Image (cartoon, rainbow, N blue to C red):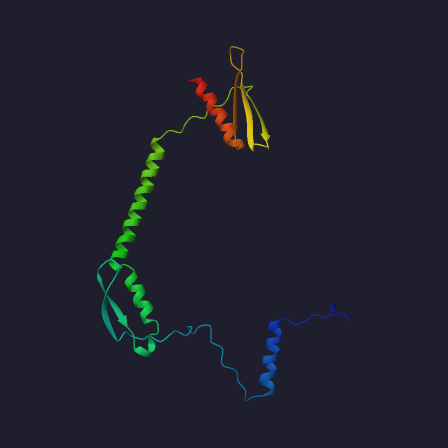
Length: 181
């Protein structure tokens, strides 16, 4: 027997029906009231520090360390280690401001540098230039030639070998640029 034609209720619908049956069947059982959307979520009670003690922090300054009541502070030693292992609040704020100023300065210098340096003009190879490449699996190298026609009729032929195709093509192009003088 298959249940293909029977539509099963959703979990939400099942929970609603169960809740209604529970209220109708037994009036003495009551579920806890659901929090209204306007009531704030429960917050942990505020526990004030009992006393403060001075600790020397990483930067060498003295900072106040708050002590909670003994039965309310099971992480006291971990908090103390953390306080000792970092700089004081003033030094942390100063370091953050210094880093922000340095990053703004670096960004301004970089923008200025980009504006002052002209982009190199991309020169193209002459019309009719040919690359011929082949891969040699035994040596795991790309071998290639660049043939560039010249005005005199005799083409310039350059050869090279590299482990990658793009480095080979770049090398052949650099060789041609070097012949131009």
